[in-house]
Every structure is written in structure tokens, then in C-alpha cells.
Image: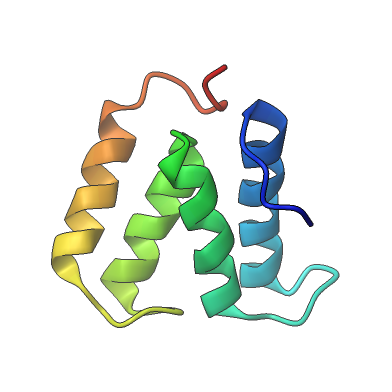
Length: 86
């Protein structure tokens, strides 16, 4: 999948993060989930921000980093909606 930006791209990126976490249609790979969630989270996708915070908190797919967990969780708590900004 091309690494585009914009509402439909970050929704797709976030969906891929969930798929890689659960192994839905792809081999389960937490690091790959983090990669896709980071792309969506950096564009303001709230569920990706929350998921990225959780992954840092648990050390799934990334080295455990509580500072990053807090950073992404705070971004999520400040988000106004769950869809990507236009």
C-alpha cells in the first residue's frame, strides 16, 4: 500500500494496524502494526494514537517506553474525533 496522506489513507493505515495486531488476513506482526498506526497517528487519527500509546505501554512491537505511551495517550485524549482530519 502506498504511504499516502489524507483522510482515506489514514483510515486505511489505522485499519492495517488493527489487522497486523490481530492477524486478520495477514501474519500477526506487532512491529508492522506500530508502523501503520504511527503513520495514521501522526495525521491525527485518534484510534491510532490510542493504540500506539498502548503498544508503547506494553512494549508490543516497540521497546517499552512509558514517555511515548503518555505522549500518544495525551494526543488521543485531546482528539476531537475518531476520523482523520480533512
